[in-house]
Length: 534
Image (cartoon, rainbow, N blue to C red; front, side, top):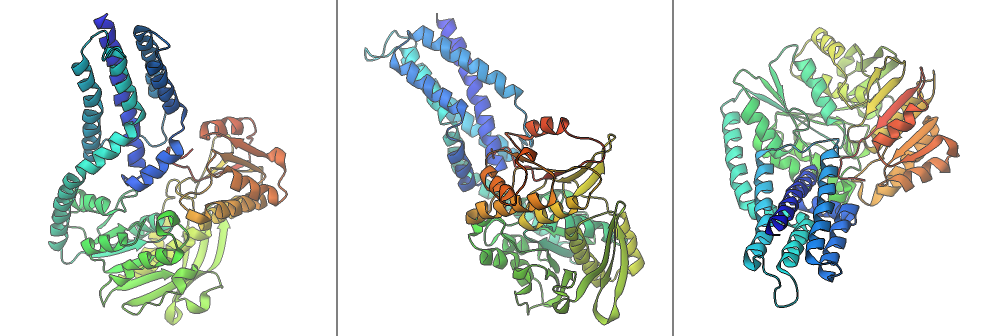
Protein backbone atom coordinates (compact mmCIF):
# COMPACT_ATOMS: atom_id res chain seq x y z
CA UNK A 1 0.00 0.00 0.00
CA UNK A 2 2.67 2.51 1.04
CA UNK A 3 4.82 1.46 -1.91
CA UNK A 4 1.90 2.20 -4.24
CA UNK A 5 1.44 5.69 -2.72
CA UNK A 6 5.16 6.43 -3.03
CA UNK A 7 5.09 5.34 -6.70
CA UNK A 8 2.22 7.75 -7.45
CA UNK A 9 4.00 10.56 -5.59
CA UNK A 10 7.14 9.95 -7.66
CA UNK A 11 5.11 10.08 -10.89
CA UNK A 12 3.54 13.35 -9.72
CA UNK A 13 6.96 14.73 -8.85
CA UNK A 14 8.34 13.91 -12.30
CA UNK A 15 5.35 15.60 -13.91
CA UNK A 16 5.78 18.71 -11.76
CA UNK A 17 9.46 18.99 -12.71
CA UNK A 18 8.63 18.65 -16.43
CA UNK A 19 5.75 21.08 -16.11
CA UNK A 20 8.08 23.60 -14.47
CA UNK A 21 10.51 23.15 -17.34
CA UNK A 22 7.77 24.22 -19.76
CA UNK A 23 6.94 27.25 -17.59
CA UNK A 24 10.60 28.30 -17.47
CA UNK A 25 10.77 27.77 -21.24
CA UNK A 26 7.89 30.19 -21.80
CA UNK A 27 9.49 32.64 -19.35
CA UNK A 28 12.66 32.56 -21.46
CA UNK A 29 10.67 33.14 -24.65
CA UNK A 30 9.20 36.20 -22.94
CA UNK A 31 12.71 37.54 -22.22
CA UNK A 32 12.43 36.81 -18.47
CA UNK A 33 10.12 39.84 -18.21
CA UNK A 34 7.37 39.16 -15.70
CA UNK A 35 4.87 41.54 -17.31
CA UNK A 36 5.23 39.86 -20.70
CA UNK A 37 5.14 36.43 -19.07
CA UNK A 38 1.97 37.34 -17.16
CA UNK A 39 0.32 38.46 -20.40
CA UNK A 40 1.20 35.11 -21.96
CA UNK A 41 -0.20 33.34 -18.90
CA UNK A 42 -3.51 35.23 -19.06
CA UNK A 43 -3.99 33.91 -22.58
CA UNK A 44 -2.86 30.43 -21.55
CA UNK A 45 -4.77 29.88 -18.30
CA UNK A 46 -7.48 27.83 -19.98
CA UNK A 47 -5.20 25.40 -21.81
CA UNK A 48 -6.41 21.81 -21.70
CA UNK A 49 -3.54 20.46 -19.59
CA UNK A 50 -4.16 22.97 -16.80
CA UNK A 51 -7.93 22.35 -16.90
CA UNK A 52 -7.31 18.61 -16.52
CA UNK A 53 -5.25 19.28 -13.38
CA UNK A 54 -8.04 21.46 -11.97
CA UNK A 55 -10.61 18.73 -12.73
CA UNK A 56 -8.41 16.14 -10.99
CA UNK A 57 -8.13 18.38 -7.93
CA UNK A 58 -11.93 18.64 -7.64
CA UNK A 59 -12.23 14.89 -8.17
CA UNK A 60 -9.76 14.13 -5.40
CA UNK A 61 -11.46 16.38 -2.82
CA UNK A 62 -15.00 15.49 -3.87
CA UNK A 63 -14.53 12.04 -2.29
CA UNK A 64 -16.47 10.49 -5.17
CA UNK A 65 -13.70 7.92 -5.42
CA UNK A 66 -11.89 6.04 -2.65
CA UNK A 67 -8.43 7.53 -1.87
CA UNK A 68 -6.51 4.69 -3.49
CA UNK A 69 -8.58 4.90 -6.67
CA UNK A 70 -8.02 8.68 -6.76
CA UNK A 71 -4.29 8.04 -6.52
CA UNK A 72 -4.51 5.61 -9.42
CA UNK A 73 -6.54 8.02 -11.62
CA UNK A 74 -4.13 10.89 -10.98
CA UNK A 75 -1.11 8.64 -11.56
CA UNK A 76 -2.48 7.43 -14.91
CA UNK A 77 -3.39 10.97 -15.97
CA UNK A 78 0.09 12.26 -15.12
CA UNK A 79 1.76 9.35 -16.91
CA UNK A 80 -0.19 10.24 -20.06
CA UNK A 81 0.79 13.91 -19.69
CA UNK A 82 4.46 12.98 -19.17
CA UNK A 83 4.30 10.97 -22.39
CA UNK A 84 2.73 13.93 -24.25
CA UNK A 85 5.37 16.32 -22.88
CA UNK A 86 8.20 14.17 -24.20
CA UNK A 87 6.48 14.01 -27.61
CA UNK A 88 5.98 17.77 -27.92
CA UNK A 89 8.30 19.66 -30.25
CA UNK A 90 9.16 23.33 -29.98
CA UNK A 91 10.31 25.69 -32.72
CA UNK A 92 12.76 27.25 -30.27
CA UNK A 93 13.94 24.83 -27.56
CA UNK A 94 14.76 25.90 -24.03
CA UNK A 95 18.36 27.10 -23.74
CA UNK A 96 19.77 25.96 -20.41
CA UNK A 97 21.73 29.06 -19.47
CA UNK A 98 23.01 29.54 -15.94
CA UNK A 99 20.11 31.87 -15.28
CA UNK A 100 17.64 29.20 -16.40
CA UNK A 101 19.26 26.68 -14.07
CA UNK A 102 18.99 29.11 -11.16
CA UNK A 103 15.31 29.83 -11.80
CA UNK A 104 14.49 26.20 -12.51
CA UNK A 105 16.28 24.95 -9.38
CA UNK A 106 14.63 27.45 -7.03
CA UNK A 107 11.19 26.83 -8.56
CA UNK A 108 11.65 23.06 -8.26
CA UNK A 109 12.75 23.29 -4.63
CA UNK A 110 9.75 25.43 -3.69
CA UNK A 111 7.30 23.38 -5.76
CA UNK A 112 8.39 19.99 -4.46
CA UNK A 113 9.01 21.28 -0.96
CA UNK A 114 5.36 22.16 -0.34
CA UNK A 115 3.82 18.74 -1.12
CA UNK A 116 6.80 17.00 0.51
CA UNK A 117 6.10 18.91 3.70
CA UNK A 118 2.46 17.82 3.57
CA UNK A 119 3.44 14.19 2.94
CA UNK A 120 5.94 14.15 5.83
CA UNK A 121 3.51 15.96 8.16
CA UNK A 122 0.52 13.73 7.51
CA UNK A 123 2.50 10.54 7.02
CA UNK A 124 0.43 7.63 5.78
CA UNK A 125 -2.42 7.86 8.29
CA UNK A 126 -5.93 6.74 7.44
CA UNK A 127 -7.47 10.18 7.92
CA UNK A 128 -6.73 13.71 8.96
CA UNK A 129 -9.19 15.55 11.20
CA UNK A 130 -11.63 12.74 10.40
CA UNK A 131 -12.33 14.27 6.96
CA UNK A 132 -9.68 13.39 4.37
CA UNK A 133 -7.22 10.57 4.06
CA UNK A 134 -3.60 11.64 4.34
CA UNK A 135 -3.06 10.50 0.73
CA UNK A 136 -5.87 12.83 -0.38
CA UNK A 137 -4.23 15.87 1.20
CA UNK A 138 -0.82 14.92 -0.20
CA UNK A 139 -2.26 14.34 -3.65
CA UNK A 140 -4.16 17.62 -3.43
CA UNK A 141 -0.94 19.47 -2.56
CA UNK A 142 0.79 17.95 -5.59
CA UNK A 143 -2.12 18.97 -7.87
CA UNK A 144 -2.16 22.52 -6.49
CA UNK A 145 1.56 22.81 -7.24
CA UNK A 146 0.98 21.47 -10.78
CA UNK A 147 -1.86 23.95 -11.39
CA UNK A 148 0.08 26.94 -10.07
CA UNK A 149 3.55 25.97 -11.34
CA UNK A 150 3.74 29.28 -13.21
CA UNK A 151 3.37 31.14 -9.91
CA UNK A 152 6.36 29.30 -8.43
CA UNK A 153 8.41 30.26 -11.50
CA UNK A 154 7.44 33.93 -11.07
CA UNK A 155 8.20 33.74 -7.35
CA UNK A 156 11.62 32.30 -8.15
CA UNK A 157 12.36 35.20 -10.49
CA UNK A 158 11.46 37.67 -7.72
CA UNK A 159 13.54 35.79 -5.12
CA UNK A 160 16.54 35.73 -7.47
CA UNK A 161 16.37 39.42 -8.43
CA UNK A 162 19.11 40.51 -5.97
CA UNK A 163 21.31 37.62 -7.12
CA UNK A 164 20.78 38.43 -10.80
CA UNK A 165 21.47 42.09 -10.11
CA UNK A 166 24.82 41.30 -8.49
CA UNK A 167 25.79 38.89 -11.27
CA UNK A 168 24.80 41.39 -13.98
CA UNK A 169 26.75 44.17 -12.27
CA UNK A 170 29.89 42.03 -12.16
CA UNK A 171 29.53 41.11 -15.84
CA UNK A 172 28.89 44.76 -16.73
CA UNK A 173 32.06 45.88 -14.96
CA UNK A 174 34.12 43.20 -16.70
CA UNK A 175 32.80 44.19 -20.15
CA UNK A 176 33.32 47.88 -19.41
CA UNK A 177 36.92 47.19 -18.35
CA UNK A 178 37.60 45.31 -21.60
CA UNK A 179 36.23 48.16 -23.70
CA UNK A 180 38.21 50.79 -21.77
CA UNK A 181 41.38 48.79 -22.46
CA UNK A 182 40.82 49.27 -26.23
CA UNK A 183 40.81 53.09 -26.77
CA UNK A 184 41.31 52.73 -30.55
CA UNK A 185 38.28 50.48 -30.98
CA UNK A 186 35.61 52.04 -33.21
CA UNK A 187 32.10 51.19 -31.96
CA UNK A 188 29.17 51.34 -34.38
CA UNK A 189 25.68 51.12 -32.92
CA UNK A 190 22.74 49.93 -35.01
CA UNK A 191 19.12 50.21 -33.95
CA UNK A 192 15.70 50.50 -35.53
CA UNK A 193 12.22 49.04 -35.37
CA UNK A 194 13.28 46.63 -38.11
CA UNK A 195 16.24 45.99 -40.38
CA UNK A 196 18.94 46.28 -37.73
CA UNK A 197 20.06 42.64 -37.77
CA UNK A 198 20.34 42.52 -41.56
CA UNK A 199 22.17 45.85 -41.61
CA UNK A 200 24.56 44.54 -38.98
CA UNK A 201 25.42 41.51 -41.13
CA UNK A 202 25.83 43.56 -44.29
CA UNK A 203 28.07 46.12 -42.58
CA UNK A 204 30.20 43.40 -41.02
CA UNK A 205 30.77 41.74 -44.38
CA UNK A 206 31.69 45.00 -46.10
CA UNK A 207 34.01 46.26 -43.36
CA UNK A 208 35.73 42.87 -43.13
CA UNK A 209 37.31 43.64 -46.50
CA UNK A 210 39.58 46.06 -44.66
CA UNK A 211 39.21 45.70 -40.87
CA UNK A 212 39.12 43.12 -38.09
CA UNK A 213 35.45 43.30 -37.13
CA UNK A 214 33.41 41.87 -34.27
CA UNK A 215 29.63 42.06 -34.29
CA UNK A 216 27.06 40.98 -31.74
CA UNK A 217 25.94 37.53 -32.97
CA UNK A 218 22.37 36.41 -33.65
CA UNK A 219 19.91 38.57 -31.75
CA UNK A 220 22.31 39.51 -28.95
CA UNK A 221 20.85 43.01 -28.85
CA UNK A 222 20.08 43.36 -25.14
CA UNK A 223 22.48 44.74 -22.52
CA UNK A 224 23.32 41.23 -21.32
CA UNK A 225 23.72 40.00 -24.91
CA UNK A 226 26.17 42.83 -25.62
CA UNK A 227 28.01 42.17 -22.36
CA UNK A 228 28.34 38.50 -23.20
CA UNK A 229 29.70 39.36 -26.66
CA UNK A 230 32.35 41.66 -25.21
CA UNK A 231 33.37 39.29 -22.40
CA UNK A 232 33.53 36.13 -24.51
CA UNK A 233 34.39 37.27 -28.05
CA UNK A 234 36.23 40.60 -27.97
CA UNK A 235 39.94 40.27 -28.84
CA UNK A 236 42.73 42.88 -28.65
CA UNK A 237 43.15 42.82 -32.44
CA UNK A 238 39.55 43.89 -33.18
CA UNK A 239 39.40 47.36 -34.69
CA UNK A 240 35.63 47.70 -35.08
CA UNK A 241 32.74 46.54 -32.90
CA UNK A 242 29.29 46.51 -34.53
CA UNK A 243 26.72 46.54 -31.75
CA UNK A 244 23.07 45.78 -32.48
CA UNK A 245 20.81 47.54 -29.98
CA UNK A 246 17.28 46.32 -29.34
CA UNK A 247 14.63 48.02 -27.22
CA UNK A 248 11.21 47.24 -25.82
CA UNK A 249 10.90 50.23 -23.50
CA UNK A 250 12.36 53.69 -23.06
CA UNK A 251 15.94 53.74 -21.79
CA UNK A 252 16.93 50.37 -23.27
CA UNK A 253 19.16 51.89 -25.98
CA UNK A 254 20.70 54.40 -23.58
CA UNK A 255 21.63 51.55 -21.23
CA UNK A 256 23.64 49.83 -23.97
CA UNK A 257 25.20 53.13 -25.09
CA UNK A 258 26.32 53.84 -21.53
CA UNK A 259 28.30 50.61 -21.72
CA UNK A 260 29.80 50.64 -25.23
CA UNK A 261 29.99 54.42 -25.92
CA UNK A 262 29.34 54.28 -29.71
CA UNK A 263 31.29 56.49 -32.13
CA UNK A 264 28.89 56.01 -35.04
CA UNK A 265 25.25 55.02 -35.30
CA UNK A 266 22.63 53.79 -37.75
CA UNK A 267 18.88 54.13 -37.31
CA UNK A 268 17.25 51.81 -39.84
CA UNK A 269 13.58 52.54 -39.10
CA UNK A 270 11.07 53.90 -36.64
CA UNK A 271 7.77 52.08 -36.89
CA UNK A 272 4.89 50.57 -34.88
CA UNK A 273 6.81 47.74 -33.19
CA UNK A 274 6.51 46.72 -29.51
CA UNK A 275 3.65 49.18 -29.02
CA UNK A 276 2.42 47.04 -26.13
CA UNK A 277 5.31 48.41 -24.09
CA UNK A 278 6.08 51.68 -25.90
CA UNK A 279 2.39 52.69 -26.18
CA UNK A 280 3.05 55.41 -28.81
CA UNK A 281 5.15 55.81 -31.95
CA UNK A 282 6.66 58.94 -30.37
CA UNK A 283 8.06 56.80 -27.55
CA UNK A 284 9.53 54.43 -30.14
CA UNK A 285 11.15 57.40 -31.88
CA UNK A 286 12.69 58.91 -28.74
CA UNK A 287 14.03 55.50 -27.69
CA UNK A 288 15.66 54.71 -31.04
CA UNK A 289 17.23 58.17 -31.14
CA UNK A 290 18.86 57.52 -27.76
CA UNK A 291 21.64 56.08 -29.94
CA UNK A 292 22.17 59.34 -31.85
CA UNK A 293 21.88 61.38 -28.66
CA UNK A 294 24.71 59.30 -27.13
CA UNK A 295 27.18 59.90 -29.98
CA UNK A 296 30.19 62.18 -29.34
CA UNK A 297 30.53 65.56 -31.03
CA UNK A 298 32.79 64.07 -33.71
CA UNK A 299 30.44 61.12 -34.26
CA UNK A 300 28.49 60.17 -37.39
CA UNK A 301 24.87 59.08 -37.75
CA UNK A 302 23.15 57.45 -40.74
CA UNK A 303 19.35 57.82 -40.61
CA UNK A 304 16.73 56.26 -42.88
CA UNK A 305 14.55 59.05 -44.28
CA UNK A 306 12.06 56.59 -45.77
CA UNK A 307 10.36 56.47 -42.36
CA UNK A 308 8.42 59.54 -41.27
CA UNK A 309 9.54 59.37 -37.66
CA UNK A 310 13.15 59.17 -38.76
CA UNK A 311 12.88 62.01 -41.27
CA UNK A 312 11.07 64.42 -38.93
CA UNK A 313 13.51 64.05 -36.04
CA UNK A 314 15.95 66.96 -35.89
CA UNK A 315 19.57 66.04 -35.10
CA UNK A 316 22.05 68.78 -34.18
CA UNK A 317 24.65 67.09 -31.98
CA UNK A 318 26.54 65.11 -34.68
CA UNK A 319 27.15 64.95 -38.40
CA UNK A 320 24.15 63.23 -40.04
CA UNK A 321 23.83 61.47 -43.37
CA UNK A 322 20.24 60.74 -44.32
CA UNK A 323 19.40 58.11 -46.90
CA UNK A 324 16.41 56.77 -48.84
CA UNK A 325 15.34 54.44 -51.64
CA UNK A 326 13.69 56.02 -54.67
CA UNK A 327 12.46 59.56 -55.32
CA UNK A 328 10.02 60.24 -52.48
CA UNK A 329 12.56 61.60 -49.99
CA UNK A 330 15.45 62.15 -52.43
CA UNK A 331 15.35 65.94 -52.00
CA UNK A 332 15.85 65.67 -48.23
CA UNK A 333 18.42 62.85 -48.33
CA UNK A 334 22.19 62.79 -48.74
CA UNK A 335 22.37 59.27 -50.20
CA UNK A 336 19.76 57.82 -52.58
CA UNK A 337 19.40 54.38 -54.17
CA UNK A 338 18.59 54.64 -57.88
CA UNK A 339 18.33 52.50 -61.03
CA UNK A 340 17.25 49.42 -59.05
CA UNK A 341 16.87 46.26 -61.13
CA UNK A 342 15.79 42.88 -59.73
CA UNK A 343 16.50 39.54 -61.36
CA UNK A 344 16.71 35.86 -60.43
CA UNK A 345 20.39 36.43 -59.64
CA UNK A 346 19.74 39.34 -57.25
CA UNK A 347 19.79 43.11 -57.61
CA UNK A 348 21.84 45.83 -59.28
CA UNK A 349 21.50 49.45 -58.18
CA UNK A 350 23.33 52.75 -57.85
CA UNK A 351 23.90 54.88 -54.78
CA UNK A 352 24.21 58.62 -55.37
CA UNK A 353 25.65 60.87 -52.70
CA UNK A 354 27.03 64.36 -51.99
CA UNK A 355 29.50 66.12 -54.29
CA UNK A 356 28.63 63.96 -57.29
CA UNK A 357 29.43 60.68 -55.54
CA UNK A 358 28.04 57.60 -57.28
CA UNK A 359 28.69 53.88 -56.93
CA UNK A 360 27.16 50.95 -58.83
CA UNK A 361 26.59 47.80 -56.81
CA UNK A 362 25.54 44.20 -57.40
CA UNK A 363 24.09 41.99 -54.69
CA UNK A 364 22.41 38.61 -54.34
CA UNK A 365 19.82 40.24 -52.09
CA UNK A 366 16.33 41.27 -53.23
CA UNK A 367 13.74 43.64 -51.84
CA UNK A 368 13.70 47.37 -51.20
CA UNK A 369 14.28 46.83 -47.50
CA UNK A 370 17.61 45.11 -48.22
CA UNK A 371 18.67 47.91 -50.55
CA UNK A 372 17.88 50.39 -47.79
CA UNK A 373 19.96 48.43 -45.29
CA UNK A 374 22.85 48.28 -47.75
CA UNK A 375 22.86 52.07 -48.19
CA UNK A 376 23.33 52.52 -44.44
CA UNK A 377 26.22 50.06 -44.44
CA UNK A 378 27.86 51.78 -47.43
CA UNK A 379 27.60 55.20 -45.74
CA UNK A 380 29.44 53.95 -42.66
CA UNK A 381 32.07 52.20 -44.81
CA UNK A 382 32.70 55.44 -46.70
CA UNK A 383 33.03 57.39 -43.45
CA UNK A 384 35.63 54.87 -42.29
CA UNK A 385 37.66 55.57 -45.41
CA UNK A 386 37.01 52.39 -47.38
CA UNK A 387 37.66 52.68 -51.15
CA UNK A 388 34.81 52.02 -53.60
CA UNK A 389 36.34 48.80 -54.95
CA UNK A 390 36.45 47.15 -51.54
CA UNK A 391 32.88 48.24 -50.85
CA UNK A 392 31.72 46.74 -54.16
CA UNK A 393 33.52 43.50 -53.42
CA UNK A 394 32.01 43.33 -49.93
CA UNK A 395 28.46 44.00 -51.17
CA UNK A 396 28.77 41.38 -53.91
CA UNK A 397 29.92 38.78 -51.37
CA UNK A 398 27.04 39.29 -48.93
CA UNK A 399 25.06 36.14 -48.29
CA UNK A 400 21.35 36.16 -47.60
CA UNK A 401 20.63 36.35 -43.87
CA UNK A 402 18.62 33.31 -42.78
CA UNK A 403 14.89 33.94 -42.22
CA UNK A 404 15.14 37.53 -43.46
CA UNK A 405 13.76 37.55 -47.00
CA UNK A 406 16.18 34.81 -48.05
CA UNK A 407 15.32 32.93 -51.25
CA UNK A 408 16.12 29.34 -52.16
CA UNK A 409 14.86 26.81 -54.67
CA UNK A 410 13.95 23.23 -53.78
CA UNK A 411 14.91 20.21 -55.92
CA UNK A 412 11.26 20.03 -56.96
CA UNK A 413 11.38 23.47 -58.56
CA UNK A 414 9.52 25.32 -55.78
CA UNK A 415 10.91 28.72 -54.73
CA UNK A 416 10.92 29.42 -50.98
CA UNK A 417 11.00 33.00 -49.70
CA UNK A 418 11.92 32.76 -46.04
CA UNK A 419 10.94 35.90 -44.14
CA UNK A 420 10.08 34.07 -40.95
CA UNK A 421 11.96 36.25 -38.47
CA UNK A 422 9.97 38.89 -36.60
CA UNK A 423 7.54 40.23 -39.19
CA UNK A 424 6.63 43.92 -39.16
CA UNK A 425 4.26 46.16 -41.19
CA UNK A 426 6.87 47.57 -43.58
CA UNK A 427 8.80 44.32 -43.98
CA UNK A 428 5.72 42.15 -44.59
CA UNK A 429 4.46 44.55 -47.24
CA UNK A 430 7.85 44.42 -48.94
CA UNK A 431 8.00 40.61 -48.76
CA UNK A 432 4.56 40.31 -50.36
CA UNK A 433 5.59 42.65 -53.16
CA UNK A 434 8.65 40.46 -53.78
CA UNK A 435 6.34 37.42 -53.88
CA UNK A 436 4.13 39.21 -56.37
CA UNK A 437 7.07 39.45 -58.75
CA UNK A 438 7.20 35.67 -59.16
CA UNK A 439 4.78 34.83 -61.98
CA UNK A 440 5.71 31.31 -63.10
CA UNK A 441 3.33 29.38 -60.84
CA UNK A 442 1.11 29.83 -57.80
CA UNK A 443 2.07 32.50 -55.27
CA UNK A 444 1.42 31.19 -51.76
CA UNK A 445 1.84 32.90 -48.38
CA UNK A 446 2.01 31.11 -45.02
CA UNK A 447 1.71 33.46 -42.04
CA UNK A 448 0.44 33.78 -38.46
CA UNK A 449 0.53 37.58 -38.76
CA UNK A 450 2.37 40.13 -36.63
CA UNK A 451 2.58 40.57 -32.87
CA UNK A 452 3.36 43.17 -30.18
CA UNK A 453 1.54 45.97 -32.01
CA UNK A 454 -0.51 47.15 -29.03
CA UNK A 455 -3.80 48.86 -29.87
CA UNK A 456 -2.95 48.64 -33.58
CA UNK A 457 -2.69 44.83 -33.49
CA UNK A 458 -6.01 44.19 -35.25
CA UNK A 459 -5.78 47.14 -37.63
CA UNK A 460 -2.29 46.35 -38.92
CA UNK A 461 -2.99 42.63 -39.30
CA UNK A 462 -6.15 43.50 -41.22
CA UNK A 463 -4.00 45.62 -43.55
CA UNK A 464 -1.64 42.66 -43.86
CA UNK A 465 -4.65 40.63 -45.02
CA UNK A 466 -5.48 43.26 -47.63
CA UNK A 467 -1.90 43.15 -48.92
CA UNK A 468 -2.02 39.34 -49.03
CA UNK A 469 -5.16 39.48 -51.18
CA UNK A 470 -3.47 41.86 -53.65
CA UNK A 471 -0.23 39.89 -54.00
CA UNK A 472 -1.04 36.19 -53.56
CA UNK A 473 -3.00 33.39 -55.18
CA UNK A 474 -3.29 31.22 -52.06
CA UNK A 475 -3.19 32.23 -48.38
CA UNK A 476 -2.59 29.89 -45.43
CA UNK A 477 -3.29 31.60 -42.08
CA UNK A 478 -1.69 29.90 -39.09
CA UNK A 479 -3.00 29.89 -35.53
CA UNK A 480 -5.72 31.88 -33.77
CA UNK A 481 -3.84 34.95 -32.53
CA UNK A 482 -4.38 37.15 -35.61
CA UNK A 483 -6.70 34.96 -37.67
CA UNK A 484 -9.85 37.10 -37.56
CA UNK A 485 -8.04 40.32 -38.47
CA UNK A 486 -6.07 38.81 -41.37
CA UNK A 487 -9.06 36.93 -42.80
CA UNK A 488 -11.22 40.06 -42.61
CA UNK A 489 -8.60 42.01 -44.58
CA UNK A 490 -8.23 39.24 -47.16
CA UNK A 491 -11.96 38.87 -47.79
CA UNK A 492 -12.45 42.64 -47.91
CA UNK A 493 -10.42 42.66 -51.14
CA UNK A 494 -12.59 39.99 -52.79
CA UNK A 495 -10.13 37.14 -52.38
CA UNK A 496 -11.57 33.73 -53.33
CA UNK A 497 -12.59 31.81 -50.20
CA UNK A 498 -11.59 28.51 -51.74
CA UNK A 499 -7.99 29.78 -51.87
CA UNK A 500 -7.98 30.70 -48.18
CA UNK A 501 -6.89 28.09 -45.63
CA UNK A 502 -7.05 28.47 -41.84
CA UNK A 503 -4.86 26.01 -39.90
CA UNK A 504 -3.87 25.50 -36.27
CA UNK A 505 -0.08 25.36 -36.62
CA UNK A 506 2.82 25.22 -39.07
CA UNK A 507 2.74 21.44 -39.16
CA UNK A 508 -0.82 21.62 -40.48
CA UNK A 509 0.25 24.30 -42.96
CA UNK A 510 2.93 21.96 -44.31
CA UNK A 511 0.31 19.26 -44.84
CA UNK A 512 -1.88 21.69 -46.79
CA UNK A 513 1.11 22.77 -48.88
CA UNK A 514 1.99 19.17 -49.72
CA UNK A 515 -1.37 18.76 -51.45
CA UNK A 516 -0.97 21.71 -53.79
CA UNK A 517 2.68 22.46 -54.59
CA UNK A 518 4.07 21.95 -58.07
CA UNK A 519 7.17 23.07 -59.96
CA UNK A 520 7.24 26.82 -60.52
CA UNK A 521 5.27 27.71 -57.39
CA UNK A 522 6.59 30.22 -54.86
CA UNK A 523 5.95 30.04 -51.11
CA UNK A 524 6.50 32.98 -48.76
CA UNK A 525 6.87 32.16 -45.06
CA UNK A 526 6.04 35.47 -43.39
CA UNK A 527 6.84 35.38 -39.67
CA UNK A 528 7.02 32.44 -37.31
CA UNK A 529 5.56 33.23 -33.91
CA UNK A 530 7.29 31.87 -30.81
CA UNK A 531 5.84 28.85 -29.00
CA UNK A 532 4.24 31.17 -26.43
CA UNK A 533 1.71 32.32 -29.04
CA UNK A 534 -1.20 30.19 -30.23
